[in-house]
Amino acid sequence: MQRMTRAAARRTAIAATVLDRPRPAKATARHLKNVFATLGLTQIDSVARVVRSHYLPYFSRLGPYPRETLDRLFYTSPRMGVEYWAHAAAFVPPQTWKHFARAHSEWWRNDFGQRHPETGEEFRNLQARVLAALSARPMSAREVAEVVDHDLPEIHRGHWGWNPSQVKVALEALFAGGIISVAGRNDHFERIYALTRDVAPELPQLPLTYGPPDDPALGLDPNAQLPRGISGVENDVVGLTRIAARALGISRPEDIADYFRQRRAPTDVAISELIDSGELREVDVEGVPALKWHEARTPRTVNARALLAPFDPLVFYRPRIEWLFDFHYRIEIYTPAAKRIYGYYVTPFLLGDRLVGRVDLHRDRAAGILRAHQVTWEPGEEHTAELADELMTMAAWLGLTAVDLEGTHLPLS
Image (cartoon, rainbow, N blue to C red; front, side, top):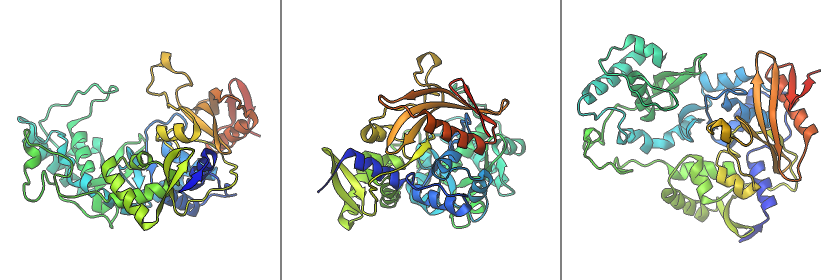
């Protein structure tokens, strides 16, 4: 068994996510496609404290690039990626979308309203009317609600103050089932829903069903036992494990399972298959059993420098960065203000092969300033000049005129 130091494992992880590569003089669509193909997914989040989160992993690797180019690659045909619940909300290649066959087939295991004893039939009728509306054109939930009538009461869930309409719930159930997809986002970052076949022609148009073929009403029975796998359809866990293992470079089984939010048991079976095929190799990282992708590079040194989005694949599984980088990380937007330690929107700062600090970032559009409200360095680390350079580069990309680094005003020249 190969033995690796933790420093070598960190360099392997950084190289796998192409953060070790020099940034191009001018980032093009080809560069964006290469990053997406390497990462295998891009997580989506609505928080726009700096910029919508899916833009940041590309900046971290490529430096300044035209965001409209990434929009075009995701939202015009032929699409580089489509939206799905892959690692939370995320873009994945159309072929990867197909790997979630069981998730599509078993959306009805969760009760979105379809089996409510009093309103279930009306909810199912609403879903049918929603599909009929989307057959005319892609629409946001608000637009669908304007053309689809229903008598269902609105839902009050009290979660972060968000009370979704029944139309929105019906749309999200159809989205979970792979029956509809997302054609784009509007100015409010709301999903523009469309029939799957109208989003990417290589994707199948799945039917609206409420159970497996041999029991099509199973998902409507409030007393039925609905364990995972009841449909008889399985996700392509080997395919998902292969993508995750390659993107991670060096990982533990739990790291691989989290990449596409798969269960450990089928992931472990897939890992064994990839070990047998030689695609994964067992290694020892200072006493920790780990897995290395057979083509993963381990550079002798890395000269990485990047501010990382909280949803960047290098850091989105927090136990992995604690293991590899000895770095405890929370974004803190969901932490009550009085209990925050490092700030609101906390971005790890990668320098070389270490996560050396945490930066609380905010794009102040009105003032034209990128504000680093709080910077917290790891013990023995302080790299203010390097951080200032990275902030200046980011500010220019965002169309701002200055950086405020903990009260120090740095105008862009």
